[in-house]
Length: 425
Image (cartoon, rainbow, N blue to C red):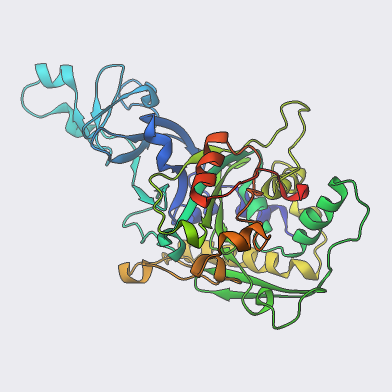
């Protein structure tokens, strides 16, 4: 267990907090590019800061303080221009770097030194990668944005799912290095939700956790596998500092503030070989619900929705002073200690774990994948229809996939796609 002081250090993310300063050293995914197909601005809250994300008329993106430094008007209702965002209250125009480019009345009546040179709005860099918009809230110069190999995969249908979860980000990230939860949270719970009483899923027999440059891996042997299986020889990736990579999708746990997180899911399905070559014109972004509107209860039917329930059940901020950890939690202890070391490094003026400063080292980074065939070779339509990969024939990760996205996925795959969850088949 942790002391209350340690728990505070690990969970508080506002400006000036040790963990907040740590997470600000990394690029964070905050939205989907396609969200701006039919809008120009979006209110966002990141690590306790209220901001506005916008796309200007030239196609560039910016992220600035939500309030105009003139009279504190809400810039999310501003006008986008060819370069920047203009306040709708008095017309002050700000560039993506926060500089004030115009003050219409002041510019008209002023002589001599420009008043706008003395004014600046808080602004953060934004980049696009993999259909996502990434923001960097830390000190400059910014590190490189890691270009994971998966973001360059072709011949696949990609979708992005966003959900706001009312609990602390660390509860989500500790799930990223907790292999045994899959046995009970997903496999066995799914058996019960289908109305069955068993048999239970294969038990975990052996676990291992390893550190590598970009995070940690967890490896496991179950009753139905052995030490030659890829789940043991390769494993899954707990991506540093707040992500998960399972081989065909990423999950990020981005802090909104101390008691809310933005879950960002990026999902890839290679199309059947008969459908290649396939080029996706636009990556859809949709919001995944977490509450059943009819019953008012948490949604239980899909894999990530089940994870959300576990995190929410720990409270807004889990009280880790009351824990009783076991051997399966060794990975959780490893990442907690790493966060503590990283906070010390920052205090000493050093970079934390997994920061990349060399542009060449940030290109097409290969991460461990337990089964590369689905992405490297793909499957035929015949194989998929025969049940070779249920990931390709249903979207089981989150509830609420819009009909338009399902239809686009069906067109790309050349076959029917079901939106039923993990427990439904």
